[in-house]
Image 1 (tube, rainbow, N blue to C red):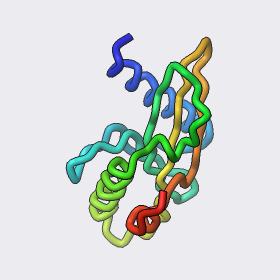
Image 2: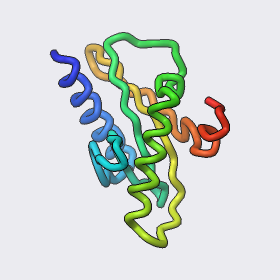
Image 3: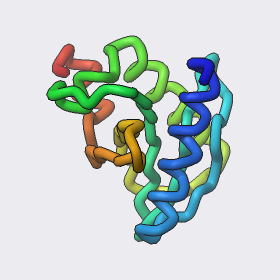
Amino acid sequence: MERHMIGRFGEWWVRMWLRARGFRILHRNWRGAGTELDIVALRKQVLHIVEVKTTKRQTAVHLNERVSLRQRIKMIQGARVLCARVPNDRREVRFSVAEVHLCAWPRVRWTDDAFRADDVGNGRR
């Protein structure tokens, strides 16, 4: 399977996984501010901006380490543009990471609130 197709499958699997846990998928592959947000989902009035990583090998690396500083900045910029389109919406926004490990049956590792916009501006990882 091509790398592009593996990534798309991982995003599809995570959307199904999120729906099964009560999330409502608002956008997939949303584009704006020169970036793409893999998944934008809503659950209990919290907006989740989700970066999906798909791998054939399970890693011991913490999920938030799989998202580079550059990717974090792009996600934050995209989220700001997306949220600005809905004036007076004061929802909490969380940046989350999902990793799909492709094995006999795909498994999802999830880190909710993997990083905060304030931390990226301060150089924290």
